[in-house]
Length: 357
Image 1: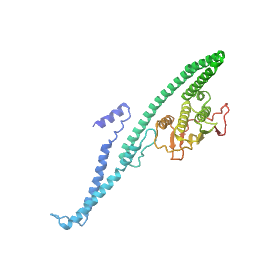
Image 2 (image 1 turned 60 degrees about the vertical axis):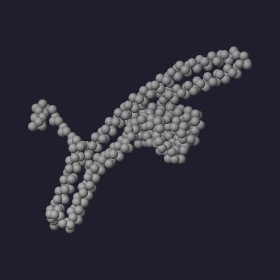
Image 3 (image 1 turned 135 degrees about the vertical axis):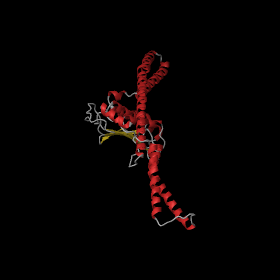
Image 4 (image 1 turned 120 degrees about the vertical axis):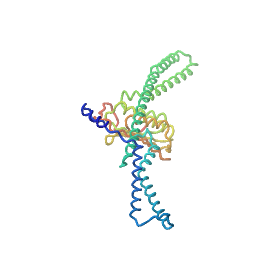
């Protein structure tokens, strides 16, 4: 009566009829098991009724094997059907154990599971919601981190850098007027201040690469490779496609930060002699690769790699780390098509062939 009244009210008010309520998973599972057991017991009853077997009262010894075999067949058939019917729950449990929000896209497909399709769909929706919330929270955290890096880099450059520059100039004037016996010590102090000024500038450049904002991703990766080679002594081969598609600032920053973290891991852990840094385009996708010839064997992911995965999720990219023991480490970031605009024809001179530092 209530359903008829509701439908009548919907027609009278012009509103679309309300969608039927979905069946709850517990009730759907109950009816699934009820139907299976009912079919098995019905089939057993029909077989018993149509077969020539008889049951006496009291039961004869010759009838006990027949009853035992029949009961065993019914139990086995019931167990087999229930096991096959609930097999998707095993796959769902396996997915629950292996799911990682930093590796998006791991879903359980519904392949004719009937009433369990709603449970599988609900779990997939929960994963999508959690991944979206994780991506949003990571975006806010990384944006705050980049803002703080920008502020610290600006303070290092504008305040500490300028103070060291003033001190360097003052020392130069003092050296010019100092007697010969003190000039050597003052020159040593002058070189110490100059080295400190260079270190401050390098720290500021690592915190916020001004070349990325001023000259673009290509020049920023070139400067990153040069600084890495000079600081670590590891020979680096750079291969960056000079005609990359137009990229947003967010994509460029993610590519730069992942390349920076990858090279930092090489310097800290790989014991490599050579590393390759490449950024190429293929089939509309961008592929960033950092490969070294070090010791490999990275079995556990530390904060650095997890941070790289979080950054990759911000642009929908996929990060893979291949590190066999003794075979070096290959970090690969695949960025899906992010722009349909034509390649950037940069007015700045860029090399078209690999360079090695």
